[in-house]
Length: 112
Length: 116
Image (cartoon, rainbow over all chains, first blue to last red):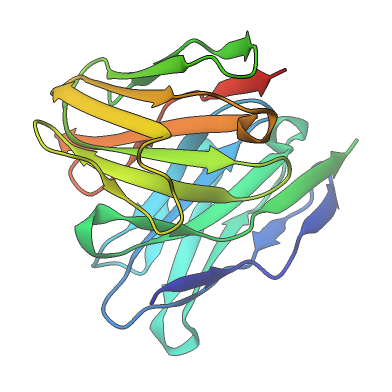
């Protein structure tokens, strides 16, 4: 069965600093990988996705993620964080039947 | 594109009553819709998968007689929480895939249910 690990429950960064959110997955085949962001009391917004091809994926709001098969990782990065980026971030792996398995999420706090 | 709406956004009901939550794909045809439940400060737990015109597939541990799911059209799925109890209070989120979203799930804004 597939699984997703987000080892950091909380991360605090200063506005303007760079950001990296970690995600490790376990899946028997080539995974579909996603990053979603959730603001309080809201649904999930898709930031980016990886299906195949170029392992460096560009998303919305200046985010990018790199798929590293050897490390089973799909870390999310942003070179300069804005205060509005404060939210909960979820990594997910797509399985058969289009099901998604989510990580436990990383809460990002941005200090001004 | 790929917008999913949910109604209502929040609902308060008395214990023992039933509550219906609607999930709509506004600009695409959703061949498959998913229903999730999210507890405070936790991740999303898949409850069931519904394909248009067929019965929903429930995840292990989810009571299908309590959480009735109907996916009668390519743009609408409903989740009915029957005989709701306080422990059913939660944040319910739907998502949809179809054409042209393909393998990507697009999520609704969620429904906050509080059972008194």
